Image 1 (cartoon, rainbow, N blue to C red):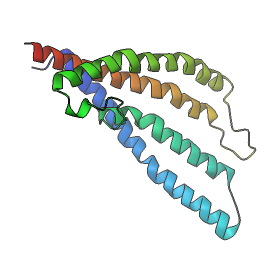
Image 2 (image 1 turned 90 degrees about the vertical axis):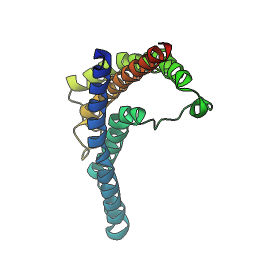
Image 3 (image 1 turned 45 degrees about the vertical axis):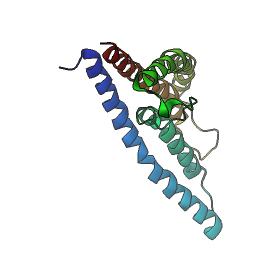
Length: 171
């Protein structure tokens, strides 16, 4: 029977995976709208601030919402050039130290700074400065604390798995 901590880590993986897979569909939105914008501008000589901002919002949503899923899949850049050839125990130590000393403090500071920033935007229902822009700047700014929470959760899952690997190897 798996330990409760592994069950919790699995739940985090499912959550970040579901959100990441859903966010991945934004690639189609970005490509489709950007193609439409370029064609409209160069073929018909018209532009759209609203569509341009939609591309920016979708691009931001893609990266901010899929970052934790990318971490889970091992898609982030690793500084440790020896990681690939390291033993499972050494990898677990690197993952645990990275999660506890770098990732979690970073995400907690980001959440601490971004939550009031997003809250202020919600308080005034901030909208685009452009007359024909999107009236949803507050939603875009909400993605920043969401990013921090999702990345912190995935860091916790990474730390749980690394700790379990270290405990398993010790026995």
